[in-house]
Image (cartoon, rainbow, N blue to C red; front, side, top):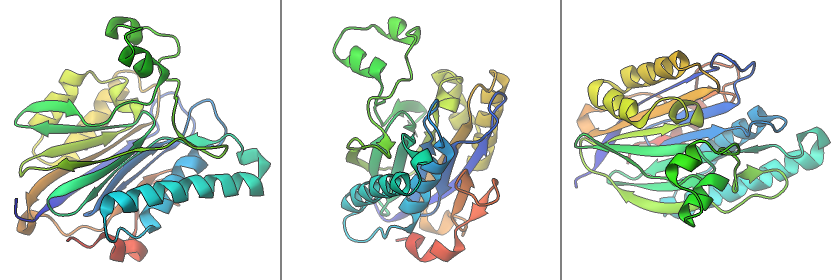
Length: 271
């Protein structure tokens, strides 16, 4: 495939039951990411903000997969450093799902239970594997999907980025095709919106921004029990991608709303 570009959008919403948005997101021409601060732990917003801002500042030079792995290691080190400086930040943690674009394919780094999906030729597939207790039990055959759906600790993580020791991310390559649409989202989306509705939304909305807005509306209509964050990106011919600055959202935005990463723009030049 000749070099293509990304047409992207992103959005976040606090939801209907939370008082703080502990999600962070980044969307740019070379890097997409969603981080979800761990629920039930202190300062999840600080953890997700640290993950996304550290990732954004990390140079994506050379091998993008190796660069992503190095960025995740830098995030883990930074979380540990913050906890040493301030004991109140001990035990904080976050998920991270990140995709780095090189013009023909993505390097993916994933830890936790945020997700990356692909819509290709009308079919939705999940690119990442949840690092949850329930997924591990399903993989080992000790739980059926229907049992997993009703499990009381369904969202308990077995791997995350934490200030008291982080697990290793899954890092892999994914070959893209023209016309592909990608969704990165926190569990405030897929935990509420059924896969069929996610597929229909991604397939039915022409612009990434419209798909983002629709997914947030669906999650809130389903009760909005958690923070809701999603990034949608389309693989398009290089000349068809709007020239947009990278966006920083959620806890990672200084003002709590959408922010721009102009100072980091050199990291995100289209290949």
